[in-house]
Image 1: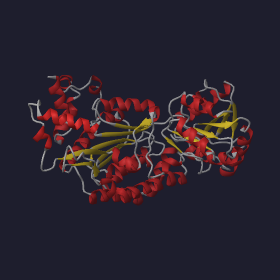
Image 2 (image 1 turned 90 degrees about the vertical axis):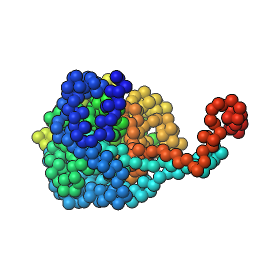
Image 3 (image 1 turned 45 degrees about the horizontal axis):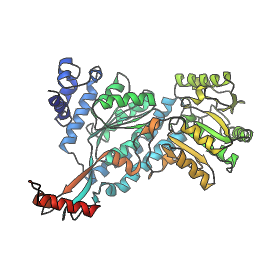
Image 4 (image 1 turned 90 degrees about the horizontal axis):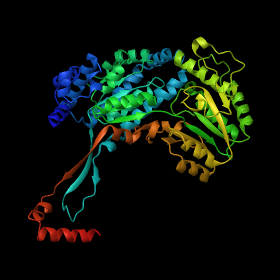
Length: 516
């Protein structure tokens, strides 16, 4: 009975749209759910009808045309780019409205421009990515046979998008998902309501709902969305939410790519100019008011160079942001985040840290949630600022005298999403790359490895699992399907029929000798 129930559940992933809707509705009926072998926790999730019907329609469309042609995929990528181009001003305005104030330059550079580049890169390389791969065949054992690996679409992919770069983190994955020939359902963040409204309204002009659909958050859509039996699920966000998403996906054996965060350190080598390090690190730390998962969360300076670093940061901030309330300095996303950052600073102060306000001569508008950037000197591990991902314009600074103590400190904590060594010493650079594991690395910069279109992006351990971007993104959203093509003759069938005593065993022993 149990085996049959598992078989029935698996069959729901390949039945008609009507059968899929019936299955999703049955999970809320205890008697039917037990028959379907659905876990108890899944039965407690109330899946909104709009999610059920969209998933069923996309699944049915996939089954009707499971492998879109190259031309169709190129057309989809062009439509994705056209959606952006036709609605640029409205999309930028919506993101600004969601933030309260989002630097237009930051939206255009880190979201709009990067997404257009990503789509162009996918179009350029798609034919190469789609090409079946030749694999070796042992000629002595399988003469005239062939091996191939064929990338094929998975089916329906779910994407859960955070608020900090909502355009980038929805459309960059979509470029890979559509390039791989899939269909997609995208759930936006509760803090991206204005953007979600625009995307929900304009997307049907470019894609039918059975190809691409956007959903706003709220109304129980979060847990319900990750409980759908997607063929793959991509989540970007916090580790705590990522664990819940992964648990929901596991109930359907849905594979997941998790892009989380963590505390990514920068390490300034003793040979590297402190002024240059300040210029580059401060640019990243102020970008989007520090609300970036791959931002510099804390840093190491050679002991004795703290005063010089602070001096340069004060000067640089005054030059770059003469008015903290101006349009170039992005607001903190919401009041709870603003309050959290205030509490983080107060906790550090009461526990003995020295706080350096880089905007001490300015008066931030708290109604706009403009948070003054701070350096935190002498941080200790009992402070919140060293225990949690900061996600704001606060930079703790630790000092060191030996490179091994830096490596030991980082390795004693969760593996970060990125590390940023600043040094012109190749041996020191390679020491950190080989001794400290992280999701990615930028050398003598921070963050910019994420924008390289031919590099995969992804975390490790607590900072995530799986990759996307570049060819790895195409592969993540494809089934790299192994196919063996038998030749005109089958030596296995000719020589290895039972009874095995005699010629079959003799031939096998000879073959084993050849391999040893």
